[in-house]
Amino acid sequence: LMYLVVAYISIFKMRIMMPKLLRVIMGLLLIIVVATSLVYYPASTWWVFVVLILLIGNVEITAFKHSKNDEKGVRILNMMSLFILVIYIVLVAVFI
Image 1: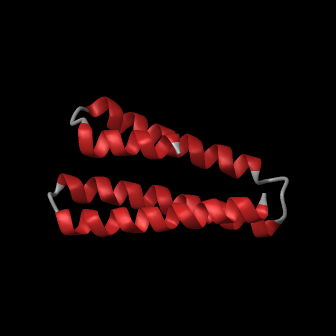
Image 2: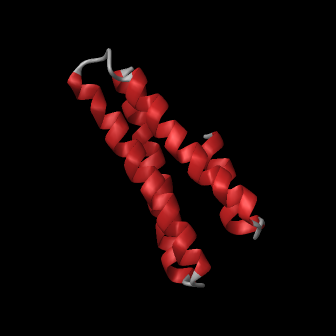
């Protein structure tokens, strides 16, 4: 959730480089932490990791579309991000 807050701030509110760099670093660290924490769980829980990668990829595509001023694309990607977040929360509640 903290990653999504930093991503929102870096994409829509602040136009400087530091939040963008922080967003990328937090995304990479989130992937590493989730991957290492899922090592000891059954293979079916790796769906949580796959959905997390989809969410981070969607946020990065949203940042690219926002930089190109594609408002329709950004709106669609924001809806997809919310949908992926709901799927992620459901998977975490079911598997872990």
